[in-house]
Picture 1 (spheres, rainbow, N blue to C red):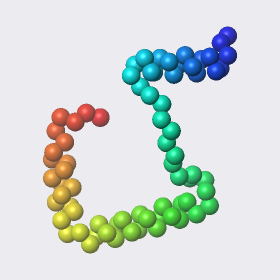
Picture 2 (picture 1 turned 180 degrees about the vertical axis):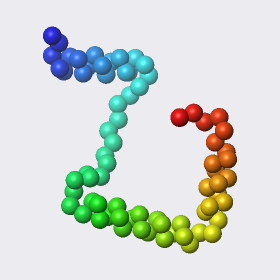
Picture 3 (picture 1 turned 180 degrees about the horizontal axis):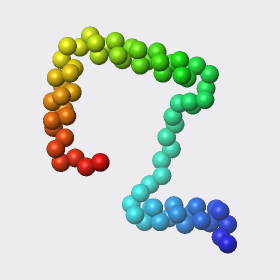
Picture 4 (picture 1 turned 135 degrees about the vertical axis):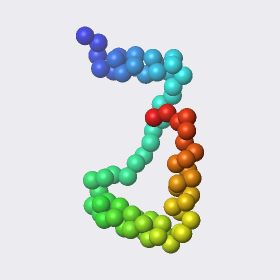
Length: 72
């Protein structure tokens, strides 16, 4: 049986051959103290900002109408 490092390298080589490249993405630590509260705070701010924009609903409706041909 191949060593785990060899299998990982083979998988990465295959992806590179398909034109892919590895990247590192840093994301917030969802386990960090205060993370959930900060999410709630930012969500409340976004919701309040949305309420203050009278054109947002029509903009979103127009955007929905413009997705013909998109694929999931």
